[in-house]
Picture 1 (cartoon, each protein chain N blue to C red):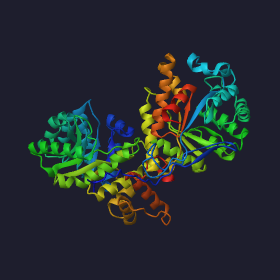
Picture 2: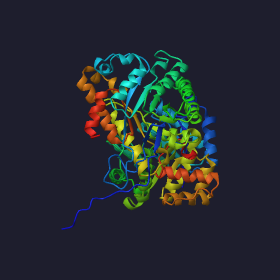
Picture 3: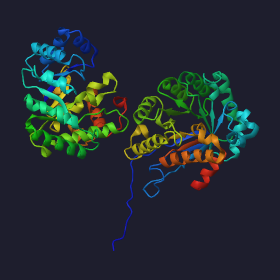
Picture 4: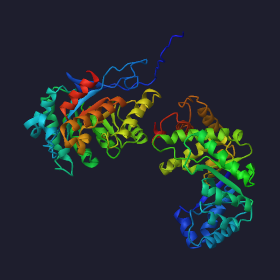
Length: 301
Length: 295
């Protein structure tokens, strides 16, 4: 009888290894030359995907009790909140500057940047900073954050096609890493990478393809992340060979299913995260510490 | 390459206004320009033309014919407008277009026999657009067989595989590659048929200044694979120059890229680099983005 020999693929593309943070507060993402979880192929995954908990810079407007309960009083103080998260065993903290959103409090850039700086001094993990997503306001806020925290190698975004020149330049000039965000379209995603990388070294870019929650378009996010990975690793397309960040926690906790009850919420966030992990996300941002625990148990870490 | 001049198109605002106001000057201007630029047919695209069909078609067809000796291609999905136009064509016209849809087979195809016209037949069926090369071939074989039954010989059939924008998220590039394959094997499958494409659709949705290079490169590629004709812009001088064989060096670069050769870009002038990059995108060797020339 012929002995069965499993086929073994070897790919030519390597996802760029990106370092976030500095000193003893660093983490590395990317660096793999295999498809997600294809450990049977030639190659390796030097940096397993990272799990991050998200902290808001203001008391959450959404008071879903089972989402806020693990943090207690800390939700009124972003730094305490971040420290609580560190206690849950995260790889990094994500600070969302939601209060700067013109549709929220329209809080000024200066205060937001000062908060980021203070938080940096207090936490022991690398820091990811997300602006509100308002392209105009972010151009101001994220530029300020980059300047005030110069040299800290923060992961800062979202950098979008409307503000990449301003925000990208501030990130370059002040030694940080950019989150390039495009609206769920692989052609637009590549275009933004091309434009950013005209002045930013490609190993200073992480891709955010936009993550949708289970039941709210996760199929699009899944196949897009999968495709970005395939095109990077298999066809060695330089402009998609970046690590991918899946900012999914907030999207999940916006759903009525997650708000309804705790078990459902944890599973909603957990299944969304697990799916995007399987698709190939390198960084996953969650809201609930018990989801984090659930995921670590499932994945076996 | 037979070029069917695309510029009299009802989607263009000046054309639709000119038709509505019976402004012969605009229509005849476009006709003359395209004729002088070397077009072989003048396409008259009137859209669905639901109002004043008979009278408008009579005016329009006569108006165009006064300004050119070229034959016309009547471009509408409405069989009533089609017949109204064909009635006034002095030369052997093209019906643009019929398809494998039941309605089209019943109402459009018979007009080719009745008016002794050429007919563009697309791969569309009642189920929509066949997704793969194989299913496109299957569908077109069926429809052409039906045309033969109606007494239309293969030589009068111009097969259209339907070009879709290369820029549509993901699939566009694969479809572009598939259509090249389709044109390549068409003669083996249905000997004697002609072929045509709506060329500019390849660059639909792409920033305007980047459209011509996509159109030209794709036409060079299709021509290599045996395409007989294209509905295209004859006023694009470079496009016409390619078709007259006046740009052999770039044509060769495009062919080599089609064959999978990694052309060394460092020694090439900028213009030639742009054509190689465009060919790579159209062969799906490199993921499309609007910034494809900037990489």
